[in-house]
Image (cartoon, rainbow over all chains, first blue to last red; front, side, top):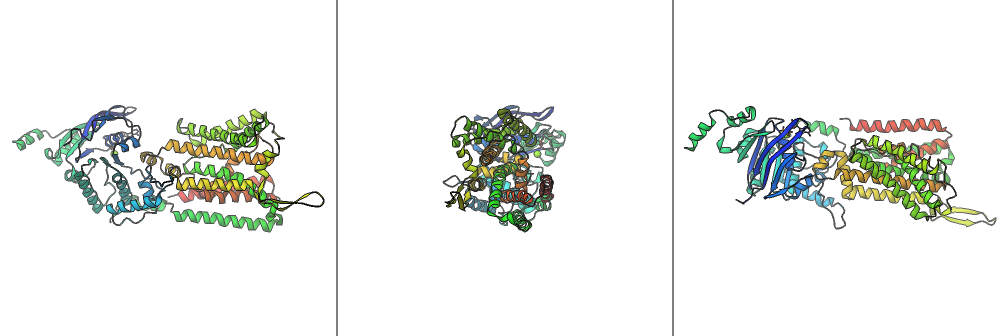
Length: 258
Length: 341
Ligand SMILES: Nc1ncnc2c1ncn2[C@@H]1O[C@H](COP(=O)(O)OP(=O)(O)O)[C@@H](O)[C@H]1O
Ligand SMILES: [Mg+2]
């Protein structure tokens, strides 16, 4: 293991008027690690992830990448240090086609500074085919694509570039079973490459299948952070719903340790 | 592959495929041809060389305004100030010429003044977060007010022959001297305004299709939040569009005032509606993300020919207003239907 975590979030805070969306949250992520971020709707998961991706500016706290303090004022700042995000809303421009969306904000250009649409098309075709061999509608505006195809574009965009930290905010919400399995494979493959992943998910099966650690949020606070072996599904549900572990948890864990 | 997602049908219906955009442009082109045929039948003078030149001149002003308007509309905005900015720019050019500046630097100054008005629009919209409709409505009054104040509401005339060249000159014009000493135009040539419009149209189409800024203009209008999250500098992109619109309004002002060889502070009232109509008839969507230069050119010709043809047919100016008013509403109505899910 390297000396520093890939990223550390220290004492992060975000509020909207009276709403405390994120309160004193600290969190880290190491290379090749998948950390599940769980919690009710409105628990603050998306806000926390958006802060890390530079899309939202926190009211307080510190972010360190590779041990160095960073300040993100826009998404490009986070991308520049290798943080890629699949937003819950997907963040696609409806009237543009898949290649244009994939390279939006990072367009490939020719020697004369013109858009190199031919190359972008070719690159997009390759990376999309890797995620979904049936992806054919490269020239259609993404508004005409299915939810699953749109999600595939958002995923492709996040892994195409030099990614060190991947934030996935409910990446399988619009996917069918086979595509969900494909995303799970992808997560395992990226983990093996040493990429660190935050996975926001409601799917207990996915979480226990893929995550090394979980962090549970409730009303903006972290109410539990555990290695996946330490907890059962019931424990996690209790954290999500009640904000605390079942009363017998420590006793059970002590037993297991002995 | 299983796409169990709910939005599939919804998006498919809502989509505006490239095919649909082409279809729209084609029907606009057909309308244009029908208009020309109709007016030609109604009045034989409509197709005369002289009248064709008049149409071309009229259209080049609407076209220049329409191209800037198209960029703004694609970002999801609107620019109601172009008619007033056109007047202000022309006045500034005229005053500079009166002050002794040569024509080309004076015209450059006028265009820059237009660009500055656009920059102010962009600033108010992106930094003060004022909706484009209100911000540019304010500029409509501000620019008109400045133009009237600077001139005391009086036109500036006697600007010299060189000032009139842009609006009245032509490339490849062949004139022969007749025996009686009067010149006879053998070939009217290609008017400078038409050449200018062509150059600007090609330049703008290149920007929109082949350059990053163009891509970002479409992305911003399509989904501003998505564009921002994708790393597009949304505010800079919008600012760019409004500056372009202002500068092109300035250019159009110079063409028009040069044509009249007079700087008229009250010129260009309601021209913004012609520009908006040209863009929307050409397929630009007021909800953003859609539009193009070639469509707007067709739209500009439709408006230009409609105005001129109604004139030629002896329709009164009041009736003309009524017709154009209905055309604007009709064009926007079609846009609404296209965007309805
Ligand atoms: N842009 C915003 N403005 C105001 N309140 C917000 C905004 N974004 C999120 N919130 C509020 O912050 C809280 C956390 O939201 P979010 O992070 O989206 O939750 P989650 O992703 O865990 O469902 C919610 O109460 C939500 O209403
Ligand atoms: Mg969320």
